[in-house]
Picture 1 (spheres, protein in one colour):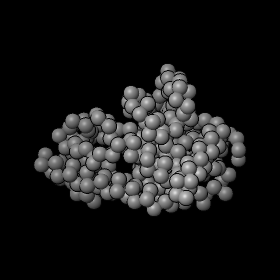
Picture 2 (cartoon, rainbow, N blue to C red):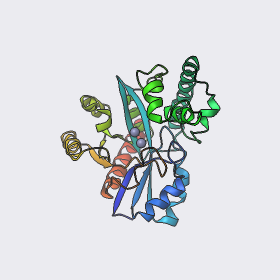
Picture 3 (tube, protein in one colour):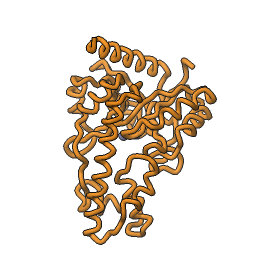
Length: 285
Ligand SMILES: [Zn+2]
Ligand SMILES: [Zn+2]
């Protein structure tokens, strides 16, 4: 399919989504999408399954990933499109990211225990499925055990930034994430810039190889969408669109296909990925 609408930011059960990769592709077909990108957090395990579901559903799948990185007072998320999801260095890099998440949860559980909140790693992992474990899963375990009434309460009083049981992750810079995506022959794109609020870093991200910006995003106002499209024009970046759908029953409740763009963008991402691949081959010969 070479035309239609595409949603380039979706999570599955391989990270913190609730659709399996197969269900996600099926849902995209039901919603009349021409393509979806699988962009699980620090994980590419869902891509193979999603690609297998392509034929039956007549929806294209863009192999992708979303890498969380740390900046002062917040996070920047880098999407990588058309990455070589079997690249060994990429797999090792993502494994190290997931490992650091587990260590962080362990440190937070120790802090919570000191505050009288007794949860085991198993209690938390129960909510993480086979995805990347993180604070949402600690919050879910706290709610289930009756320590708090809601996720919001867990974040506000215990595990949010500046709360007593908060621990930062071992730091990964957005530049390192861009480098990892490029090394895996992918196209690095800044996810939901309006949520990160780090516009001042965009020029240096571009210098390090950023190639696109997710200007079209459900939580961006129309003013923000225009603002980031303007920035894209200024720096020659591709404009991508993604719902950041985490599936039904997810906390955000965002529906698949609620932010889309033209299929043309998939073709342009593919072209750029091919160009990166050619450059890497040239360097190696
Ligand atoms: Zn994100
Ligand atoms: Zn996301």
